[in-house]
Image (cartoon, rainbow, N blue to C red; front, side, top):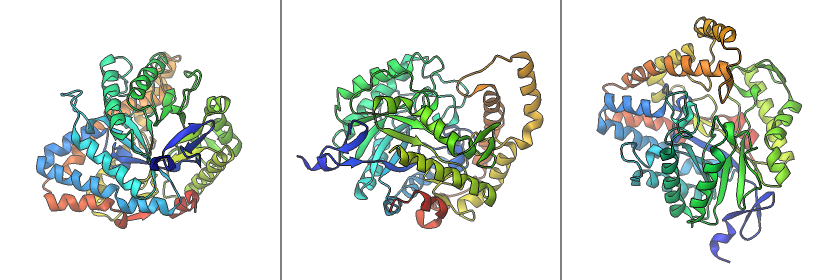
Length: 461
């Protein structure tokens, strides 16, 4: 038995086990907002690429690089991994954006910088006994229609253009070659939340991608999200060896516009029984095939309102109880942010949040973020559009979430969000290297706050 066999994971029936035979239930956090940024996590409007372009123009290349170099250093460091290990957690799902590894104007020319940053995360987690699941969160051409694939539109081009798929195969071949002998890399999460509107391409693409990876790395576990944002698994036939089928389990009662729990959210009654029923519906494939159950993402958002947040903690408690009942592993979304959902978050009086406070207020008023915002103050825009669609196009039901969310994406999350990108960047105008480094230091663990109630809920020791 090689030394790595005591750590490296494989699938044995419904469990993940080390190659030495010890069962391991992966429970931890998703590391969003670092190598794949999201607007609600760090506060910018719209998409990561639009944010970066605007910041580069305002700050200039040297100051821009100084900010992000320090940000990468502080957002996830040894202290963060040590904190997660102190809670008894054993896994970090590291979200990555393809743009760290190649540029659109030079496809297939891989960049060392992205691999070095990912190496750093793997090394940090290894030192603290944390497994890493590498999660391709944003793919070229956008594998879903939402902001978190760095998609500035409402259309997923990935499923229409073979070249985008070719680039993902090429990237995963390089990742597999680099990490195939890393025992603390628990697996490869091939595409976060795919949303193939036809449902006809995703299965064939997974087959092609698996073949390419297995030619290089026959042993590392594959994690496959179902279609429609990791909720539908009917596309899969017989399960593949050494493969985990990953479900995302966001509950209606945990959304920003949710009501009380138990109670009504988005017109539906949600309680412990309905939470379990939805979990059973989403995991039917895994339970029928006897494969491991892993909830790759879940978790409510928090408003700061004590009564409402109490409902969110009740929901979280019930979800965790369901996962325990069925032996499911899980990865809480997300580890660190500016206060909406993170286990750890930047202090409200931190330099970074003070710098962007006016922009955050305007974002909230206009409801521009898809995750965490509400539409209360823009109903005068949405009501007539929704009424027109109800009357003129009653059968229009676009993938992935229907007519109302499609309208919200176009009006709030694109039309109103894009003009705010330049406003966000202008809030950094005139800052020098030391000043932007101080802003980035707002994300250092020792300068952040911990959501203690959440930490208690997920603590395993």
